[in-house]
Image (cartoon, rainbow, N blue to C red; front, side, top):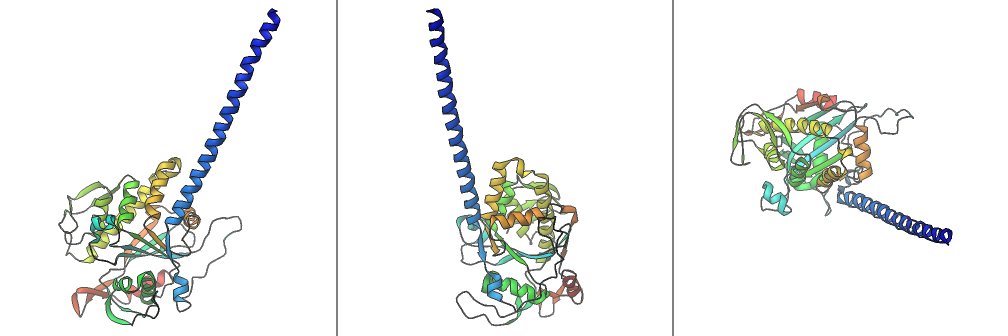
Amino acid sequence: MTGLDDSADAGRPRGRRSKALKIAGLTMAGLLVLGAGAAGWAYWHLDHNIKSVDINQALGDDRPAKAVITPSPSASPLPTGSLNILVLGSDSRSGKENKALGGGDSSGARSDTAMVVHIDAGRKKATVASIPRDTLVTRPSCPLRSGGSTAVAYNSMFNSAYSVGGAVCAVKTVESITNVRMDHYVEIDFSGFARLVNALGGVTVTTDQDIDDDDSHLHLKAGTHTLNGKQALALARTRHGIGDGSDLGRIGLQQKLVKALLEQISSTNLFTDPAKLYTVAEAVTSSLTTDTGLDSLSELVSLGESLKGLSADRVKTVMMPVVTAPSDPNRVVAKEPAASRLWESLR
């Protein structure tokens, strides 16, 4: 009897353990399915955040020649070859966030910042060349989405290209004045830039002089500061509180910000913190417009992976050489032959 009783008692725990293990297994499987579903949703969401413009289709073959690319070693899975990317910061008026950050109440947008980013063939060095928005240029005829095209405009402000013809006209105008083919186009608006800085935990910059600009609402003493997104955006936009109040002084601050952001990104190991990585990715993609060659998460990740060896100290920042325009002391024109030499070095 005792032996039978012991056997019966022993059977109950085994059954309970078996049932508990089965429940735990089903729970784990459910969590894995939910986790995979959440990851899939996150990827889909980020991927669909990105807006794009088909630059190649709009401009056709009437463009500077593409750079000759040396085939990469077969062992390298990542893309190689030099790249020229037109990066625009737009003062979009759309959305409450952009309005609150200084976009104003009117419709439309302008290219508040324009940089040609040249990445060398080895993807180890880069040059960031800024084009002052107050530069007078010959704006070429640009195709319009609604059909037809804009007229050629002489002595037109550079940033008017985006206003009249969007990304397509901005790219065509840059290619016209530089004779450099833009392989890609990237645009980020006010809110996206501010959210990116906040997602990274701020950005640390050093200013050489006091900044006191009521227009951008930025008041900083000379020295080192860690800025939040709104402050960093104000620094990128300020002009009246520094130097002679022209766009040229602002470009110097923007280039400081570019270097500081690169340093912040490289010092932040995002891949060990999935939540922070997602926050950064959401901040970027939700305010991003690209050409169709970069309009997916996989293409952006591939580009990022190919730039792993590019450190902030190997990024050179320059400005297109300019002089005061003879027709208007408040505008500038390209200084030749220095400007042509710069663009030639980026081909």
